[in-house]
Length: 389
Image 1 (cartoon, one colour):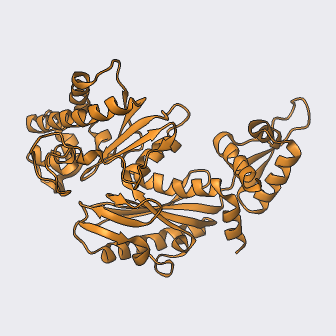
Image 2 (image 1 turned 90 degrees about the vertical axis):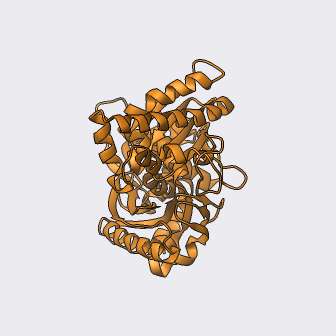
Image 3 (image 1 turned 135 degrees about the vertical axis):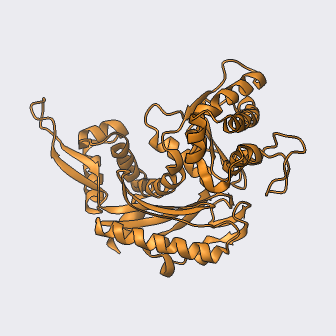
């Protein structure tokens, strides 16, 4: 019960703070005396700070405003992309306090080599965060592939060429630093991207949505009533491998005609007659200039995306479809074809709203870091034990 109540206080301040003790008590339904005891414990543990008296001149004695600490526990997030590595540290208030990234050709590279590079970035970010008065509460890693539920094993990542890679084997605490010793977790990059939309999208963000993003491939995730739909093995949401063309192009997953072969970053560049090295910024520039080949490629990608999304929307009837990653960057040219395909294929009208993410390509990285922060909010006693260790 104490653990639950400590968490309730932290979540109230995180969602609505700064708040006085009386305001916290009113929001979570506990007495002010009980809340004061909990607040004192969280303050001693370094998770809450008092900002001083609030609202002078109002009826009654003004309370002291409470806020999440800018020092103490931090969430470390990492992202392994096909062509890059990134790590960031986020404090309890959700601010990015340290970040490092590097371009890296990770496709078909040995997992040990990639993860040693990642460990170097993790150590660099840990050192920068420590100088800011932060200590890692754990490390969460976003990967472009299937990750075993409640584990840190990449079961299959076709675009990396990985299979059954246990991250804990290659990221031991002594190699990657305190964050891994505190706790290592991993998830599919699209899942972390969807969670970032849920946690960072603001009060108006949908709680029932399909999140779809593109990098080299296509990632998808489903959030229902504010909860990520994982599936029995943790593999739910593999929209990139939904077939949209019968007997179409072969895919790294072993199938044919998968969506990512028509709407993934490499697929669109190839269809536009461009090389993979030219990238999305160049593709966008040519689209803005009215390049006919690029516009044709984007229309084709938009139609393929609409065909795949139609099945998902017909099945789940979500409030919204959220486009992230490269899809968000290319949305001005993708959306018309996507919406036409949806309108043609959906059983009910009106259909789910299509929303363009404001997080861009940072969604998976931020979602990973914030998943560690959410762990602190859900289990503050563990974080405070770490503080006293």
